[in-house]
Length: 145
Figure 1 (spheres, rainbow, N blue to C red):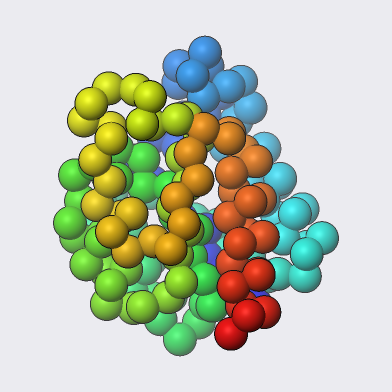
Figure 2 (figure 1 turned 90 degrees about the horizontal axis):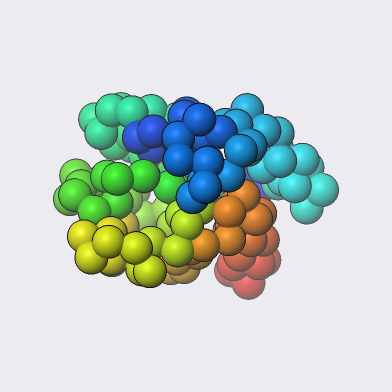
């Protein structure tokens, strides 16, 4: 099984951006933890990050025929991007939406998620562990197919 992990806007600033909300671990550590868990469960994983909506759409489109699952944390684009939603619908790859914080307990505008219209699972507020849970869910879903 091959999974594409897409991190969106400002995720490259982990460890610097609002550490009281997002923690002190940096993006490089997140990627290491994702790759270690993927190896442990026998999943091949590729991690990408972009601050550009169009590039995230391109990542999704290029996943078609190459990946069995997508884990996506679009960052603030979660709340604004119909384009990312449309790309996910176009490729029809099983997708899990992840957020480091509990976005539903934050500002009202963060409660809107276009991605959740497509994703079969939404994981919020579990920090880096949300990504490992997402990989487990995709692996389980792949086994069930």
